Image (cartoon, rainbow, N blue to C red):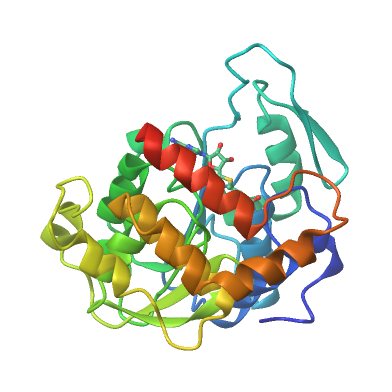
Length: 297
Ligand SMILES: C[S@@+](CC[C@H](N)C(=O)[O-])C[C@H]1O[C@@H](n2cnc3c(N)ncnc32)[C@H](O)[C@@H]1O
């Protein structure tokens, strides 16, 4: 972590917590040797890209377009034709419109460090060059998760870092299945907000990355998911992992409510009086009940 990360990255428009911005800055500054590449998969308005770039710059590495940023450039408009305007930092954005100009403006100060790829990452193929830091914030579907794993993970050398921003999240069970499946290749380093950080301890063979246990409906998926309950996780993280497991198996919500009763009650009080949509533990359980019943995980 870098408490001394520059103020300029703290106010950038984006979806990352301040601690995650510091973490990316620290990775770029302290854990990038300059001998490989950096991936930012899912840049949105350029916050994660800029945090990594600011770190690489602070670490005195020369700008060589070593940060490969991938972004579709648009958040879909709602199907019902409603207008949704969201605020990210000082920026107002209407869903359904391109945010590429905002992204380009955000990353402008670090342009020499960044190779920006606008478009569908599913159409991108990695050239096999070593990836020292792989930041992933795009695995919102099983197909994206499988693609990112297949394309990037075999290029992470021993000692390289992998960060998945969506790990301690109630949904996306396939992300956990992948990391359980790959547990002999990555050791867990720790958690920052919803991000999970691993270090590569053995390079992932391409044929191992090519196999996706979730898409193949491997009977070991549950076992792989359960392997990601790492030591010293907080109550909120354990709750999220159990809920994600319920999305995977389609069961266990009643048991989960009993097991996490205290956390659920406490979490409701934390959300009292907060502005905006309520996203407490109770909301997440009810959402899981609905989506699992609809078969929509
Ligand atoms: C959670 S946001 C990333 C947040 C960002 N890392 C930040 O620092 O604010 C996920 C991003 O993935 C992008 N995305 C989703 N599907 C994609 C695809 N198929 N190809 C490229 N980008 C995609 C979305 O447009 C969205 O901006």
